[in-house]
Image (tube, rainbow, N blue to C red; front, side, top):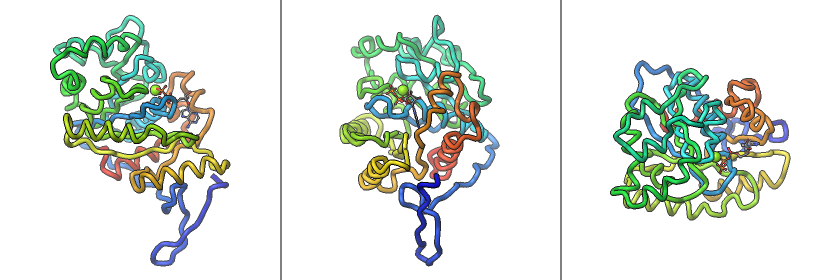
Length: 294
Ligand SMILES: Nc1ncnc2c1ncn2[C@@H]1O[C@H](COP(=O)(O)OP(=O)(O)OP(=O)(O)O)[C@@H](O)[C@H]1O
Ligand SMILES: [Mg+2]
């Protein structure tokens, strides 16, 4: 972070360290322990652009929140099954979220599995899910099927994170319809903002027609490299576009993420002292302090 230390002045004239989004740096308080669990706040991680850090954020934010004593359910809602793989959960020949979509009367508890991280469960997915859009298209209230599925278990968790696939199709609309909030990861790269208008439009449509209370919980800058002017400029443009909706926590670019994925572990367990693990812990604290998570 040494490249990145900038100072500024508060209104009272005190000198403070500024974070990369141009606001004074905050560590955010450690979340208070919860006496009881649930009902969950449901958050979709959504961006139709591929490879922006949706799955990496789902895994590591889920593990960080579990580390702070939250009961967390991570929903793999991408037929690639990367969330399941990243948490070391087998997806071959097991029931998955797809089976619940086809038969919402089926008990979700039978499909949810525990991960190696205490307090973190997962609803796995595999390639079967790629058939879901075709199967669901003629269903009554086809946008609300995931919402019905999650209603069965929402009382038992503090937070449910839905890892969406890179598309704005029926599955993603189901995720947005089921959610209280949406978190948009944006890669600090060329074209980061391309397509975001369409994503915001989709969220607005879902708010108008299906889920009036859905909120934008935040825009998360990922793969930030403070050494490159380019990365800093992209982040500046993201802040210009989204203002205070840009989360103060920024995720740096590091090869530790691919390494952790190969190991099937969250980075908070794979390399807990690494700055990237610390960044996701801080993101968890920031979301609690913003009230996005209990
Ligand atoms: N901060 C980071 N620094 C470096 N590499 C990262 C970072 N975050 C994610 N990656 C890597 O980038 C690739 C894409 O990340 P990820 O799978 O999380 O994105 P995604 O938005 O879920 O992609 P998709 O749209 O395909 O589902 C992965 O190989 C991941 O390990
Ligand atoms: Mg993904």
